[in-house]
Amino acid sequence: MGAQVAAFRLLFDTVDSIQSFVHVFIYVYILVIFVYILTSWIPLPYSPALSRVQRFLYDVCNPYLRLFRRVLPPLGPLDLSPVLAVVVLFAIQRGLDALFARLH
Image 1 (cartoon, rainbow, N blue to C red):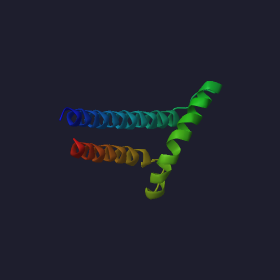
Image 2: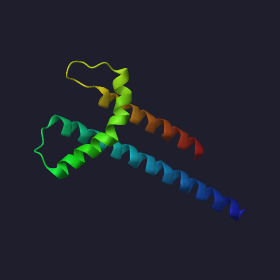
Image 3: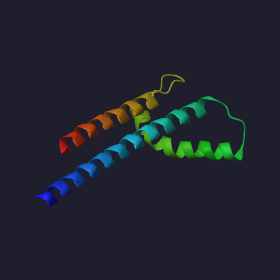
Image 4: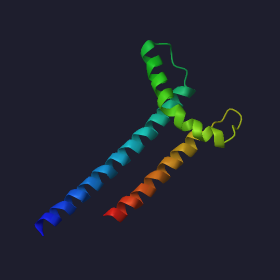
């Protein structure tokens, strides 16, 4: 009986750890998207370090945002794909929260 209780506790701890990781990952990725948007709006002075940061942000965010740029037509100079991308990330987080709640 004690071994089963320990196994269930280990399973619940694992589910909680995975849920925490997913929450942190999604929030950090949303933060990276916001920083990418800000650096695309604000002209930054040329610096090798800033150039590397901008390149990193482009490499991390652009593949995901490109999925939504195919769906949303551009509205002049306004790009709404990051808004849809963040909404989808929150929806994924809600769906995973429901899934993890069923495992509890």
